[in-house]
Length: 100
Length: 470
Image 1 (tube, rainbow over the protein chains, first blue to last red):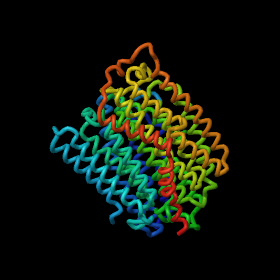
Image 2: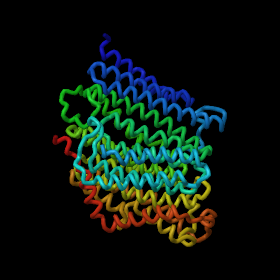
Image 3: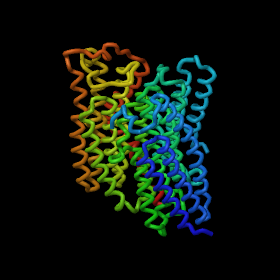
């Protein structure tokens, strides 16, 4: 049995990769994918802790994360496609009619 | 299980409206009527539960108490006013009413949350429809706003989720109301988890330094949707932050209280400061919303019943002022999506009543006496002083003073005699808009002149430390 520390370490690594991906990449599709990776890292951590504590609620949470992520992808891809239709390029720096 | 009837009514209304707009596409405002009636019914039912003794339901995942009921009423007000602002506007699409209902359902869920799972579901339920709504005008700015909102929303939800995972790892429970009873928690995991959760919620509540997305998203979204974000989302994020910290981390206030205090001062001052130079009114309101999030944080940072009371109280005058200002904006913009400061020129002479409403709303935002905003700021100041945190009090005063400049600049435009802007000349009143403005003005001045009933209601609802006492 792999001890919980290793799994959580892997989850932290995945989370960091996802977070860095959102912050550095310019393509909204890749950024979105990286954000989903952060979600999945959290799901992995939940499952690891749930197994460690023999507690079901962490696994339920992982299922909720998967379901919600699916809904978010459905909406997110539709929005990204709609933006792409309008300008035929995907670069977050060019999506800048609104200046922050 | 009669406690969730408001939620069931709203969810049922949303589904019914979805079916109705699909089957009867030519019936004007049908979806809006169904959702509005469902919201009214949910509000009445929630109000009838006011006498309930606080209890945990659904295997300790949801708390039904006066706090959750008051939150339900606040977010239903936000939802109904947004719906009325979008009345008769076909260009937003027929899906708008059901989506707004689902978003409001998410906010209501947050009000009842006693478990991190419910917090997550509530936040997603509130955000996902807003991503779609932000893009519902199909303009270039709308798509951009939706994209930014989506990416930042997914990013912040990821942070929030990972924080929750670490909290779960530290405490072996997702029910955060039992956290104070857990003593054997792994401190390192606990604090990093709480830190990530705070960052995640700070994104949603738009706390400086996590505020950059707000003005862009507010500017690009349709005005009724912006109003829902400004009022509803703020209520949802603020009350879950208060419940989470005051319930779950009741004993450890020494660690998070100071941090929230610094963030509150920073947010109040920076938000209001950035609002001053804005020319687009929706951007101005975006920055003003950031500033108001800072004021709300003061109530949490004091970590006292007074502070919780003051924060809960502040939500209503803020929301009513937002109703007044967004209602006026909606009437001015007509078929467009943008209102700049110069569009307000000459309004005081051409449309005196509408100008008066805008003045009331802006003065309430600024915190001038005889408006609800003043009473709200007064209670926050009092809470900060009672908790002997003079830094917070100074922050409130400085933030208010800076905000004054931001809010008086648009008002100055109203009285420009030289020329009347085209948008004001072609402005048309609508019944739905008039209802929103009427409620907003009566509420704002009513709370400002006679706050006692609301103070009483809020003091009953924010007194929710019953769970830590066992």
